[in-house]
Amino acid sequence: MIEHNTIKSETAVLVTLVNQNQPLHKAEEYLSELAFLAETLGIETKKSFYQKLENPDTNTFVGSGKLAEIKAYAKAHQVDTIIFDDELSPRHVRNLERDLECEKEGIAIFDRSTLILEIFKYRAQTAQAKTQVELARYQYLLPRLTRMWTHLSRQRGGIGQRGAGEKEIETDRRLVRDRISLLKEKLKKIEQQDQTRRKERDKIVRVALVGYTNVGKSTLMRLLTKADVFAENKLFATVDATVRKVKWEGIPFLLTDTVGFIRKLPTTLIESFKSTLQEVVDADVLVHVVDISHPAFEEHIRVVNQTLLEIKAANKPTLLVFNKIDQHKADLQIGQNYIIYPPSLDELKESYLAKDEQNTVFISAAQNENIDELRTKLLELIAKRHFQIYPNYKRPTGWGDMPKEETADWE
Image 1 (cartoon, one colour):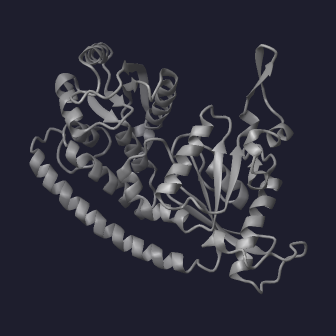
Image 2 (image 1 turned 120 degrees about the vertical axis):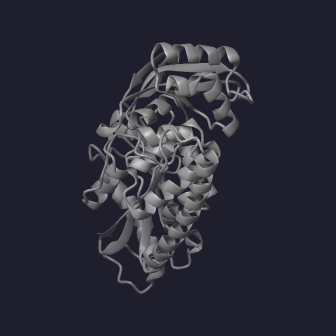
Image 3 (image 1 turned 90 degrees about the horizontal axis):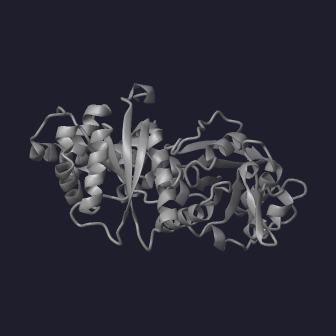
């Protein structure tokens, strides 16, 4: 793995659209996240460009005037990369590279998907994750084998084996297709091995931590398991699924930390990561972790729920965990004025967020706040499933009789 401090320092400008579906405040929020993604790869954002356009221009994504503005700024400030917040078509990439004179100016065109795929490349640790990421990157970049391809090869250690100045694009395409076929076969064998291992876990309750990226899942995983799990304040700090066996009150279960979800996640990445996301699909209980201090946390919840729906893992018993309450600020209206203040735990429990009181908990994993309540509620869900698997299991004192007929939630 190439360390981040060995990557050439780069600068970038960000580009997005402003329209009815994405008003300015939303576009600014998305670009803030895009800048965070870029920062994760060591890319410094110099400027953001907003184009008022209902739909992307079919040729260059943005209009000619905005494109000229971007070109002038990039040339004047020697910008290395221009990053678009939405997915670019192969036609967009070709035309943008031509009009921005990318080869002459040494500029690369990225989109959000490319950026995410690059981060996944550097975060992947296991053979399975590395194979999945490589496959996703090849599949995404195959129709885009232009300067985007050669730039990645030159700057970041290479996704292709040919030199940076290679012009034989058709030859490259053939080599990439061969590589995709090889990776698919390799991944199929890895998945078969994983399937065998998962079958061995059928007799133990499985709990999966899910949530938007950078919400504190790994920190919570480390707290609940007392294990040395990597946690960092960066997007996609965890790419590989991490599984730990835990025992609470005599009841064993497997706790899995999974890759964080994000808006506009590349379809190829979801497809390639189905085996990793299978840990979520196979889980008996989900712990949906939310960063309540983030201003867009409600949208993050929707993104995660939609992704769970797409992978057919939405209808599972779920504990909704609002994390980072120590950093959360709320608005309070007094007369015509609003004040911002940190709400107490009791106030949060009385808020609209606690509508499902039984399956909602407010915590701060970093400050170890209200973790006992989290453990109690999670253990209730785990125990329910455990006693269904082992109806004759000796229940710990205080558990009472768990209803044996309630199995619908677990099927």
